Image 1 (cartoon, rainbow, N blue to C red):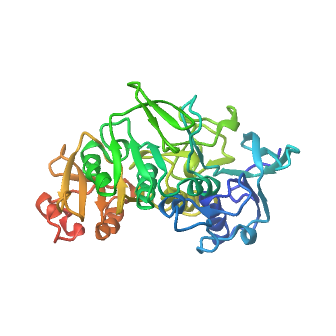
Image 2: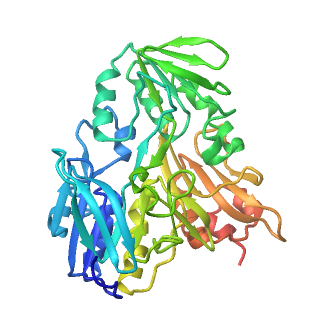
Image 3: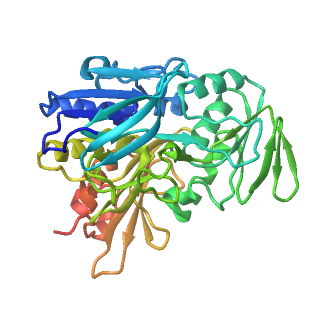
Length: 419
């Protein structure tokens, strides 16, 4: 094994060549780290942006390369870049980490050692056991196959009315596909934004030419057909399972603590809870817990972009920056939406603007104290509220609000905050 971990390690191995892995390496170099950096990535292509895979499914036919977008070039930043390679084993303790890596041709595995290992292995799309003939959308290869399959006139069934399901449904309908979305919950986005706000998105589906069927759980999928729990069978040319992702950590085999969903539990600096000091985790594979925010699952672009800054700062002995508020953006059936913070279904929703209209925001407030406190915010075609929400909720803050001023769309949100 390598020598003891020092305050300034001399070698770092990053597993994962996506956004979180790239930003980890870029932060290391930006903070003056001149030691050895090796990056191992499962996909055989350079880092690319995942949001356009669904948001721009038909308009963008090539990956949005992160190097072109100015987020860093691993070929310049890393000393050794191994694309198309797969980690298959890990051993780590206070002295460092060893990772067994298999090559694309199946040879190996070869063992690589480092003072510090950063897990940025991301996640993979999941489908329920026994489903066959179903597509998912998580990689550039998935997007290319789905794009080719969704020709005008084809019937698409989307299972899941979450972020990805709604994005693809709207685009496919606009392309001339016959689209139906099946959602087990009572409203779209129930788990993500809560039932009250999720219900406001229901009319968007019909407006976009999409049939939405909520409270409709699926029993199984076979090529060309979806069977519902009530026995009804729906025919389809294409079935997309938009049923979520799971951290790509199955290969760890008990080498690190993981949650029931397979995520690696970490603090705000990426240190593994109950794990060896030589390992950090960030991005989709991590579940972060902080005093202000509580437990925040991975799985979103903004976390992969911003959280590596805190991880690297702690690694090189710099001051750890505050944790940004959880943030998700999406294009839902022709509307640009954003979610900031972590809403709860037991809290009150205060609207800025009419949710039956085009432009509005929903503020999730906690009334348990002497004044309402802002917990989260959802915006629909109202980008002017997104920046203030991100600033007000940063670091787990829950500022007090003047309800009258907060509900007034003409009052800037920051002026509705009680001082």
